[in-house]
Image (cartoon, rainbow, N blue to C red; front, top):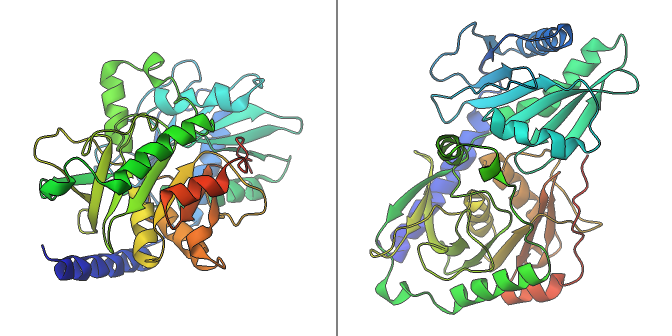
Length: 388
């Protein structure tokens, strides 16, 4: 493919992506999976179901193959798993804890894996009544308190938080093409910068250890989780750097970012995006068993397409005071998150030297080069992401 053909294809892909986001209907189908094991959970499910229907969502008593939203309810001590039949299905695990744990995120995060859910909603006792706590794969966490007699306001607030997440568009498929130029099979000066940057991030303590998923799941369930989230593994942070107008190098999913060495396995060339699948297109050497690229590849692709002056991007689970932030904590790997971050960059005085907050998640940092980003942020990031 010539440079001109690639340019035309990616301009068309960007236009089609924006059209999809503009024309997608705001409502969809949903079902309830499992029987609420307590009166409070029954009240909660009935209230949430009523709010969804009031907003125009279509309830199905039994799951259909392409159901959009599944409310999977289960006892806290016996979580069950809804195994989706379509990638677009969004599963919310819902349960109730009998007591308030000392650390809500630590206590609730494993339910994402136990229930094979995209999000968990957990009722926890509060001072004025039950609190509905959201926990996301990106370790986002926030609670919505209930006040006696305010059922309508309570479920409306839950819906307003849930709907944008459940209706977002995942882009986690990869298409591998063995068309990488032979002179790039061993990388270049850009991949060397990325490799050095991974080591520097580790030295800055900005690559926290991944959640111990292997201790919670069997090998079979672990394989299912990786397919579900489009992951090569669970780890935090990613790096990318532009190669040319429409291509960029990016770290793989699930790899140790401090040991980025092999092209096609640890660092991959993102050469495009196909919205008809949808999938990230990767150019790899013919002699390597490729890994999946980071789930944030669609965000980086969107940024590079809309901001051609940006040369590199770093994403870490940290924070910086006084920065613009997305208003909704869209899941990683969604078109909505990609567009939200790219649009915020457009509002920056200098998009090539910006830090954008991802609500309840971390930061995306842009620069002219990878080395420039690392020099600029050294000592300025806060390891703890504020949760709101």
